[in-house]
Length: 321
Image 1 (cartoon, helix red, strand yellow):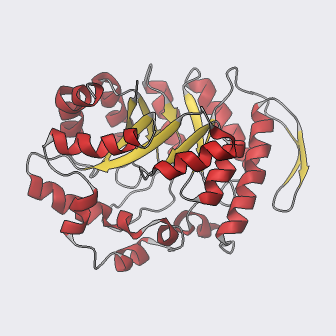
Image 2: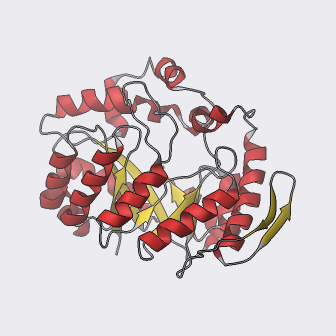
């Protein structure tokens, strides 16, 4: 049976609101949760970007059953792999074994802030593979001495390793990332309902492993208001990941998405109160072989209304599929 999750979208809400909304989502019956890990928002209009790992600590302490997952953390520039392993082990302990570590090759938007030159996609994938091997070894309780082409570690170990192993997910969008995920990940992560991603993941060694997808939605009783909000907050999404990975700041995303119309956004994001429209978009992920779909409600100011509506209407309709 498929599972349906709730997204803590750090780019659109302050830290306290993210935790409070997650508590409401747990009460409403969402099956799991994910959190974005950004240094900057995509667009100036989103206006937020708290530290995801601090939010995860608060979320672990203030919820009881809902699983947590980074969606995703980049362990190659802004964070060193040994630090990511320590953070993952700590959240796993605080949450009582409810945490999964989602990793990806990152976006320039978040990683260039340390002043290090932004590598090509091929180099980033090399770095990610090296980082995952280090992180997994540390989470398994090993001492890591590592002197690789991209990272070094000197007798690193976790003094509080997790009692329950932390599953590692890797984000995919094309052939190379699917190969990397199939070889190194316990979970495949994607934001597009493309069957070929799962097929490539399977071919690289991922057969039988879970697949987690993510879908942006914009609930509002007024469909026109929902479309306007989705356009204001989420028009960057249609640029595609080859563009999204390369732009350096929110101003650049504002400029790159200036020609995206509200109608363009509404074609890709279900907007308004029609449950059937939302279900059809989720069904595309199920048809593509995804086991879990995390929903992103666009906009910070009506999360409570969305969660109430999802509990009453959307989640029952999804579970009836």
